[in-house]
Amino acid sequence: MPRLCRGICQPAERVWKMEPKRIVLDVDTGTDDAIALMTALLAPQLKVEAICTVHGNTTVENTTANTLKAAYAVGRTDVPVYPGAAGPMVKRLIPSRAIPVPEPILSGTAQIDGVTVAMNPDELPLPVSPQQAEDQPAAVWYLSRLRSAQKKATIVATGALTNLGLALAIDPGIADGIEEIVIMGGGVKKSNITASAEANFFKDPEAAAIVLGCGAPITLCTLDATHSCALTREHELKIRKIGTPAAVFTANDIHARRESYARLQPLERAGTAPIHDALCVAYLLDPSVLTQVEDACCTVDCSAGISEGRLQVDTRYFKGKCNLKLATQADPDRMCDILVSVFEKAKSAKERGKVQSAV
Ligand code: RIB
Ligand code: CA
Image (cartoon, rainbow, N blue to C red; front, top):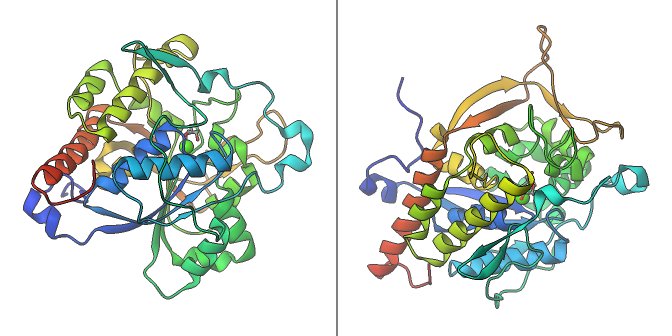
């Protein structure tokens, strides 16, 4: 059977002749979201049509400003950014459903050349973009985009799923306008924000349940998958050597995460760190980066109890109709190679004068 490949592992000449895949990013930027979006904006195999922002890693005001900054860091001010939901669909109506403890496991800092680098700063340490966000809210934009006769959209969602949840609640028929949703969220044997749940699903369980049940094809990159492809010091050095703003930002984040994880949430492979959201973009560039994927029937716990926001996988023998592809393992070397390939190609395109912007 031929190896599935969407461009990155094909000969360079063929890559450039292929029509890029149009995608929409839905992000709570966030350092790992920033790496995902820089990679997507720099990859010639992808055309980012729009970026929606959402609450999550920080407030939506910050995630919107951070998104504009991350795009500007790779020289882009031309992709519309639609500001999204400031909070979950309904969760805040029940105060006991708030985050029970502070989030020490998702934060932390490290020293790089005497400079403190935070794993999850509210404001990314990047120049402010001259670009303004659009006036139209993300959920409203989704309705018009997905109802229209344009091409179906591939959506990469790496924050709380509130924007899509709202749009689908208004018009479930928009699922027909979706080619695929690639989601970073949930965990089977892993959790982070509570003992049961992963952060993106925990922050808006109802939205996550609506999206998982919407009927569109879904690939779910779980915490199990992102942790299994945590990057090493060697990966960090390989990426840092490229020297472009995107590569240096990525290497700094790997560094900060490696130190923070070692201190706060040690992983199986010591000294490594997951760059969760970048795995979704890596998958679009080369699906073989996901090494364990199975059809599954999943939803999300909205019962406001101890398992609030938990990914619920139906493991019964008499399975219901599978609603998604559940990814639980990924290849860290392949992930690093994908990032390196994108950053290096962007660098040499700039050097050859093929692009005018800073990369
Ligand atoms: O649980 C990891 C996820 O939560 C990532 O998407 C990170 O950016 C945060 O949103
Ligand atoms: Ca995220």
